[in-house]
Structures are given as structure tokens and as C-alpha cells.
Length: 139
Image 1: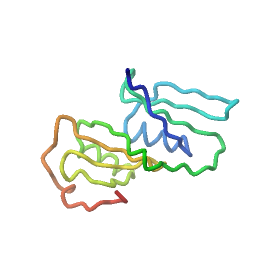
Image 2: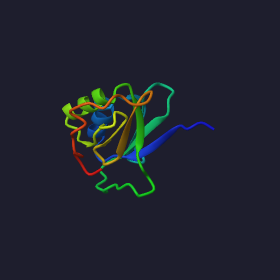
Image 3: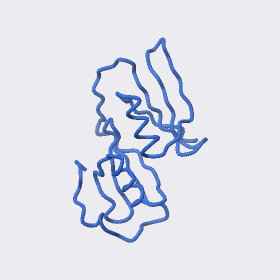
Image 4: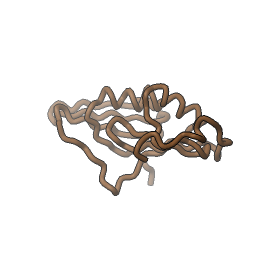
């Protein structure tokens, strides 16, 4: 068995692509426009052939998508959690759970999907300004 992808519905495709591609650094692997069904599927990954996040955009939908309690978060390993969080914060992303421990942080996508960031190869030494940061969001 091989894990292929997870799907999340998005209200604003351009805003979501900006977050996942420009801020998180994922790459678009493929896209399908389905006029008959009035939806677009965009697949994103950290590398070609890797597990994907499928963004589903239903054209013209005004539905407010909410994640049930059974869905937790998407997790991504990063080379430097402090650098990644600083880059995201500089791009206007709220750091809901700062990386005070040098290992883990949480942010949200534009659609409220929790994104966990985990430091590759263990933890970095705790450092400011992250040590003294209180939770910036609702985590």
C-alpha cells in the first residue's frame, strides 16, 4: 500500500495556491479542470512523485467548509523551523503555535486547515524571538 494524497476543499483557489506554493514552497504537480462538474483539482507536493495535497475548488460555491473533529492537520518536515516560520510570518501568515521548542510549529491555511511544521532531524536549540512568543493565534 502507498499513501497517495489527501484532499481539502478551498474557497479561493488563487489565495490557497499563494499559501501552499509561494509561502509553504510546495510545487504544483498536475491540474484538472472539470467544466461538467464545475470544479478544479490542483495537486501539490514537496517533490514530484511524493504524496500530494489535492486542492478541490468548486466553482461558484458559497459553502463554508469546516473541518470536523476527525481531521487534525497536514504535517511537513522543514530544514530549519525558525527560518521557515520567519519566512511565513514575514509573508503575513500567523504563527498559531510558535516553535519555542525548536521542533514544532503550527500555522493555518487560508481555509483554516492546520499545518504542522516539524524540524528535520530532531530539534534545533531554542532561540529568541520564538522562546518569548505567546501563541499568536488560536492554537
